[in-house]
Amino acid sequence: MKQLGLILVLFLLVLAGPSWAQETPTLENLEISLWPEFDRPDVLVIYRGAFEAGTSLPVPVDIRIPAAAGAPTAVAFVDQAGERFNQQYTTRVEDGALVVSFELSTLAFQLEYYLELSMDAAGRREFTYTYTADYPVDVLSVEFQVPPTAEEYAVQPAADSVSTEADGLLYHVAAAGSVEEGDTRSWVLTYNKADSDLTAGAVVQSQPPTPSPTTTGASGDSSTVVIFSIAFVALVGVGAGAFWLGRRTQVGAEETTPAARRSPSSLGRRAALYCHKCGAQLRADSDFCHKCGAEVRD
Image 1 (spheres, rainbow, N blue to C red):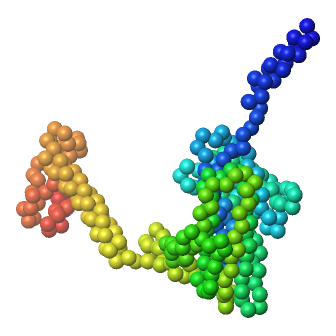
Image 2: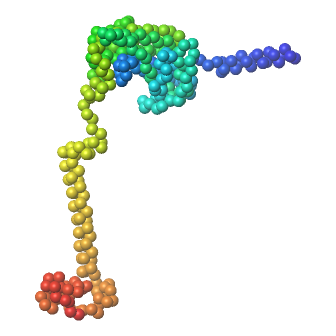
Image 3: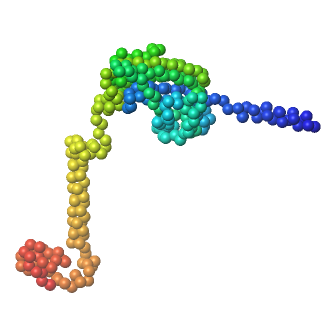
């Protein structure tokens, strides 16, 4: 009997085993951006990743970053419209790395942190970046932003493409393809730079000013002001016309109202509706002649 019970328990464990096992989710794509001297004299590292469609939500995520980073500067989840929202997270140090943990309610996320950029007295910059995959990645790409005043900019291994983007900056992009969990990739970035200018300032200055709705209204754009003025005058004119028409309609109604509908006080007031002095026709409720000003006689 005991043996039968043991067999039954083992059978149930075998059936339940697959439901207990949690497969490691796969990142459909991961783009890592390395922006040296962007808004700080360091390298800004940005992860933009998305898990495969069909991944069960929420997704428990652990991302390992160098302990030297201290802490991430931003962690966000990304909705289907591409909007980013602050993501709650925790950190812990494990095997010399800083593990950033969070529960992702969508498939996509963004994570940012900074790493130190080495520079010698002659202005030579050098940075080595090593990535160890926390998850299998179908498509991994790494982009290197070139500061506007950088010279002799080089990436090793060499990037697969170099292009100028909409912000006017040059980017080297390495297409690393698919990687397995635990795989490691490394790149070395070097360049010379005679100044300490940050890229963010140059990008902002190079962008043409885009007036906000508030600025546009206050700036006095000629066509907008003219259209608004014409519309306002037209609105006032329509209102005045409606008021005048209403008054005329009211006066006409009073002048054409049959005697039987007038108030009792008006019926016995006067028989003649003409001024005794100038002969002008009077309204039934007039006390003075509208033409000569003479008092109306009863």
